[in-house]
Image (cartoon, rainbow, N blue to C red; front, side, top):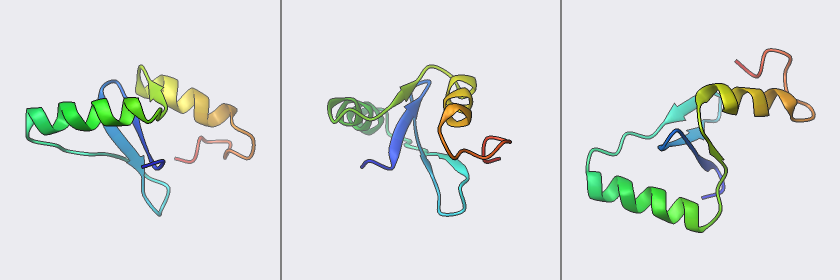
Length: 68
């Protein structure tokens, strides 16, 4: 579960190619449960895609273009 994080209430991960992926959960109850679980285990949360991108660029060893 450490591969997952939240961006603006959306469950996201980065795939093997380094691409940001949003997880589509069609069932509202399941989506709420997934977000609650991820928060409970302490995954990172970002208020926006911009905040996520800025954090990634600030990480040591991050690509100059933010990995995009």
